Each structure stands twice: as C-alpha cells, then as structure tokens.
Image 1 (cartoon, rainbow, N blue to C red):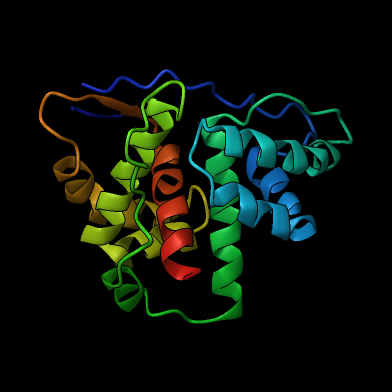
Image 2 (tube, helix red, strand yellow):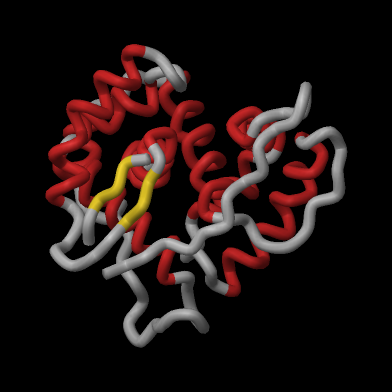
Length: 201
C-alpha cells in the first residue's frame, strides 16, 4: 500500500474482488464503455456524489449489471467503479488516435471546478472530489507520465516504471497535513478521469 500524507482521509467502498471466473472490475468497465458510451459520457460529466451523477448512474447500472454476469445492479457507484469506467473510456480514446497529451492538458477547462456555493455532502462527495483533484494535479504536472501509466498493462514492468516516474508528482500534489491511503493498483485510477477529460475535449 502506498500512503501519501496529506487531512483528507478516504473512506471509499472497495469493489469486491472477483471470485473464480467472475469478471473483474476493469473488465466490467470496459464492457460498459463498449455498450453504453453515451451514458458513460453523461456520467463522467457529472460531479461525484451529485444528484446528476445519481441520475446518470441509473442508466449506466443497467449495463453494469449485464456486464457482471447479468447480475442486477442498483445503488451508487463507488469511487473505484467510476474510476475504472473512466479508465476504460480514456483507453478507448487512445485506441482511436495518438493524442498530444501535453497540448491537451495545457488547455483549460478539463480540470474539475466546484460550482459556487456547492458543499458536501449535499452537493458532492468530498472523498471522490478530493481524489479527482489529486489526479488533476498529477496529470497537470506530468501528463506524459500519467498517460504512460494508463497505457501500461496492470502488474507489468511498464506499470512499475510509470508509477516510479510519477511518485514525486503524487507526493507534491498532496497538501501538507492531508492523508490519502492508496494501493499501488489505485494510482492508475486516480489519473484516469482527469486524462479522460483532457483528451476528450
């Protein structure tokens, strides 16, 4: 587990580990993106924990359940589940083009900004938004490194190299006095949605 010290403790629901031949979270996310891209785009435009996200989630969960051994799915997406969907959507963009990620992140409008007067928990989920802002910072600081991370296969040497290259950026993007507890495999998910927004503009 990688622990980055910073006052925001994350209490997010973890996705259950696959059992036997059950599809993994990333596999489910890829299936959802392949079958319901329009609702995925709608979902990723919403503020985590908002009423708008809840509406979009109802649509996405129809396919999420179908992609998970045709199980019924209901409720809210956990941070990890949304991030896995964002990663699959970002990788889908990479498959269709060779984007200039440095130029994309140099443009404005992709990083998350909170609506004026919005406050948690009524208007958004502070934990998920904190993770998104951490990812925005890392992607802004090292866009090529972040892109290399989501391009790398999970558990590969390339992933290890990419994480090492981003370690200083993660550390510098955590404000003094705050704490994020992240597993190694979570790091690609932190940068996934920021990259999706930067590349999809």
